Length: 141
Image (cartoon, rainbow, N blue to C red; front, side, top):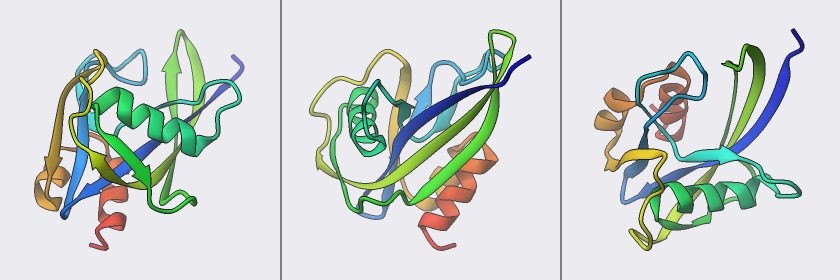
């Protein structure tokens, strides 16, 4: 089968040495049936820049109003997911962000839970190895 591609963007949102995580109700892949902890992120909309998508997705998923600290992504994640019997090559750009206003809006219904966690707690909560690598990079550990 032909491999599809999917581009997404999200936030590494830091607030007082804590990082914002989301517990997603469903996985990225049709094989993922369990909720999982990760960073707020989502698909780019038509004509949208990755940085714009990242800010929008963080707000939609968490209700936190954020701003980007640096216009260059702090991390990039590439992996494959299985969707409708097709292998999809996914690329996600993560931007370092800071909180303007926490809990400005209700989180969307894709998210089961949100948490602001210190490094150790976040490391134990994150479901995917790639997300743990990003966390270690961001916190220089």
